Structures are given as structure tokens and as C-alpha cells.
Image 1 (cartoon, rainbow, N blue to C red):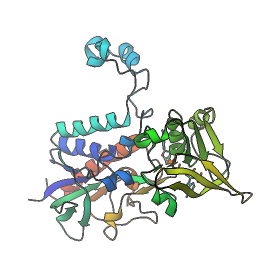
Image 2 (image 1 turned 90 degrees about the vertical axis):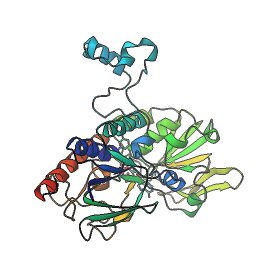
Image 3 (image 1 turned 180 degrees about the vertical axis):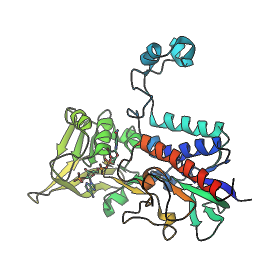
Length: 353
Ligand code: NAP
């Protein structure tokens, strides 16, 4: 028997889709991704990008830092969580990305979602039921599919960068920043958006100095992130600059970077024990090529305004894999809900439920 709905991906969109689909009695199966070294390096492990962040300050319902006090005043005593009542186990923070993702996963499980820890490597959407094949070689048939595979961090594409991945080059400060090699040493962060500034602020807790290398003299990041980063005495911007080469050797890994000033054309070398990338994202759609409509950057194209339909009837998409614009946890969760409702209605219209 084909599955009614298979959900591919395990970020906020995937889990929200699963919660809604499970509560609609569609018995969803979620392929949450595989735990492999390749996925670790690419940043595509289960639970998605939020699992690679620290505090989540903008997901509604989790007021950071003051959550404990907030709950004490906002909720009657019989409605407060145990950790608020138990003074010894006060976490003293809002919520972290990994906590939020684990809670979403658990919520999906509680409603009967089946979870498979495997990657989808191939899909056949040419006929129904759809056929979905995993890295481990299992094939599942499905009447409808929701794709929520998200996006992953970009790299500069320099050969020297590739050479030092895992030896000082990283796109995940939260995963790698606390490693001994970075402690009290200079670190380079590349980019001028929220991701780069978030990485720079986080790394400043460990590094002696963080060089923020940006190709322009204006940051793209939100005002609050700019103020926080530029007000941090450990973060030193290198404006109008690009990394030409990552310097290092086999024994020590990264030892520095060669920078080019894009205005003067002059080169400069900075000593650094690592380089972290914060230069945007690529959607995880390699396994979909030729199966449905993607835009020129590889994002899935929604076909109808305010609907999650893809170009294949019965296949829906939610979260960052179809959204290069908002890319927020809460918008991903919202579109995950939409994709489950769209799938449920589509199945009902086609007599499948
Ligand atoms: P982004 O906003 O697209 O910024 C990418 C940055 O990298 C830009 O400054 C860009 O430079 C630079 N860049 C791109 N390609 C480059 C290259 N090849 N070489 C050098 N620099 C390059 O991406 P993002 O920072 O990942 O943010 C994506 C979205 O997530 C945004 O909507 C952001 O607000 C959101 N976000 C939010 C938070 C938060 O609220 N806590 C945290 C992270 C991300 P230019 O400016 O010159 O184009």
C-alpha cells in the first residue's frame, strides 16, 4: 500500500507538516535525513539549520533570557511548566535551535509520525504512486509528497578552502567554534549578512579577535545585528575585501588568509586559526532535478499564490527549499502547516482519504 503522505526533511517546515498531517490521520512518514560525515560537512544533518544555531530569539512564544520570569508572571501557577516551579532546574534562557527542533520532532512523534533516519537520493514523480528512493536503497511509494529539505550554507569555492575543510574552514560557528584550535586565536568570518554577524558575535566568545571580511563597505544584516557586532570590541571589520586564498599547512590546518582589497587591489595576509563562511545558502534540491520546476538558483517554484503546490500535482513544498526571501524558522513552520493542509485537501479531492 502506498503511503498517503511522505515528508522529506526535518526542519521546522517538515515537523510542522508532520504534526498537521498526523493530526489529520494521514499517518505521515518523515525522512529526516541521514547521519553521515558528508552531511555533517555540508551542514545537512537531520533537524536542519536550526540545529546549528544557538539561542533562537525570534520564534514567537519563547522570550529569550526572561522566559522564566515571564512565565511566572504571565501564567497562573497551575499552568506553569515544571522547570519554572522547580527553582533548582531553571534553565534561565528562552530556547535554543536544537531544543526547539527536538521539541518539534517529539511533538510530531507524539501524534503518530513515523520517522526514518535516511536521505532521499532519488524521486520518480512521473507517475502515481510516486516512488522515493533512499540512500540505504529503500523505495517507498506515496500518493502525495511534501518536500521540506531546506537550504545549506555556501562556500567561496576556492581550492585552498576545500583543502582545509574540517581543519579550520567551517560554515557552522556553533558546531565548530568551541574547538580548541580556535581558542584565544584570531578567526576570520566572511560575509555581511545576519548569518555572518551572528557567527562573528558567537565566535568572539572564544577568539582573541574576529576579522569580519566583507566585500563591500555596508553590511546587509539587520540593524540590531549590526549594532551588536560593530559594538563588540573583539570584532574588526575588513571592508571591501575578499579572501583570495586560505593559508595553512598539513600539520596546523588553517594558519591565515590572503585578502585582496577590492578598491586598491592590494593584498594583505592575516594570521588566523580558522575561517567561517556566512555568505548565503543553496537549496537542497539536487535529488529533484528534472522532476519538478526549480528556479535558476535551484529553489522549488510554488505554482499558485499563497499555496504550496509545486509543478507536479500531488507534490507540495514548504520552508527554505521554496523560499529564498523570508527564510525564517517561523515562516518555514507556517508554510509547513500550509503544505500539510494542501496535501490533505488534495488527497481528499482525489478520493485517497
Ligand atoms: P544573506 O543575507 O544573503 O547575506 C549573505 C552575505 O554574504 C552578504 O553580505 C553578501 O554580500 C555576502 N556574500 C555572498 N556571496 C559572497 C561571496 N561569494 N563572497 C563574499 N561575500 C559573499 O544571507 P544570510 O546572512 O545567510 O541570511 C539569510 C536570511 O536569513 C536573511 O533573511 C537573514 O535575515 C536571515 N537570518 C536571520 C538571523 C537571525 O535573525 N538571527 C540569523 C541568520 C540569518 P553582499 O551584501 O555584498 O551581497
